[in-house]
Length: 372
Ligand SMILES: Cc1cc2nc3c(=O)[nH]c(=O)nc-3n(C[C@H](O)[C@H](O)[C@H](O)COP(=O)(O)OP(=O)(O)OC[C@H]3O[C@@H](n4cnc5c(N)ncnc54)[C@H](O)[C@@H]3O)c2cc1C
Image 1 (cartoon, rainbow, N blue to C red):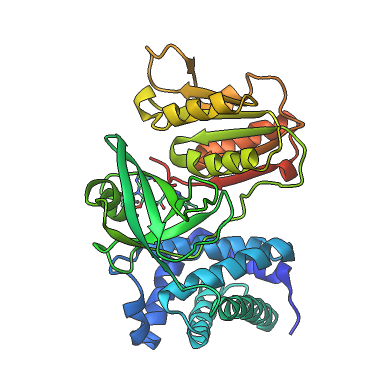
Image 2: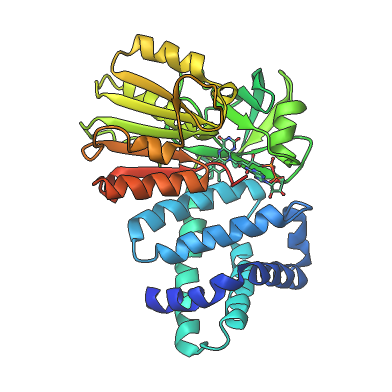
């Protein structure tokens, strides 16, 4: 079976505009053929549908970059252990996926495309199964973590400190899925906001979204002493350890969390690059971590923290939107750049940085918040 990324991408681009109907069909088919699998999923499937499609999109479009695809799939395989996924589930998912693509790309479907999808799915599933198997016996499928601190820094934003009951190995910049006791099987992703610590504690920066299941629970109904479940760490926006370059970090809202972890790890490494952190929020009250950042700045003179506020006329510091503010400075073309925040902010910042001569290979990004 040989891989043919071109055929997979071409047929997937026919399905992409019908994403919503296709994912609904996929889950309908999966549960009709395998009713016992329904219990593994949360009662409300909306976020799950988006997740499936965004993972599939990422896999299909990175079929030509085997290294980054392998890294992503092995993280995904490990993370899926928390759902209780076993090898035979991949066959059920593969059958439903193939039926879905066949149906939504019916106009162009032929044997060659079918063979290309079977080969791609088999290779991807095998990689995920192998990484899950390798992980068994080394790591738990999930970690229990006690809430040891809960600071409400703004009406909608809390900084929560957790102590996992077993060692949680991760790299700065990574994120974890979190489940609360209030919503079984509902997992949401949060970035770890600190570099690994000897005491194994991790911090999360959580903003509640209106009507949000998990974020609201974490902000309003979580107390010191509560226990959460934490999945396997994931994500590839990690510090470039060998690099001697200066660093620019652009953080929108709780997009600060992984960038703070990266900055902490650079400081701990003993390197002395100049680090600029542009930290943006709509109002000054939402710059929830500024006092901590100022303390970091005073103990590490190579760090410059630049708060930016977009929607508060009376703010007497730097005002504007991050993508545009980033361009007000001298060129960042020789820097390693890390960008994290809402999708529009991340995409626009990356676009402008590229125009200003920063090569894409030196821009590392993640998205932590959906659009409001
Ligand atoms: C890689 C990654 C890292 C992340 N890191 C963080 C982090 O460090 N801190 C953090 O606070 N969040 C982070 N998020 C977002 C987080 O995972 C959740 O999506 C968010 O907390 C909402 O989950 P919920 O269960 O509360 O809302 P849901 O129950 O999922 O959503 C409830 C309703 O709110 C809508 N909604 C969902 N998100 C938003 C939003 N942002 N604004 C407005 N409406 C919304 C939904 O469409 C739905 O109608 C991250 C996301 C990703 C993908």
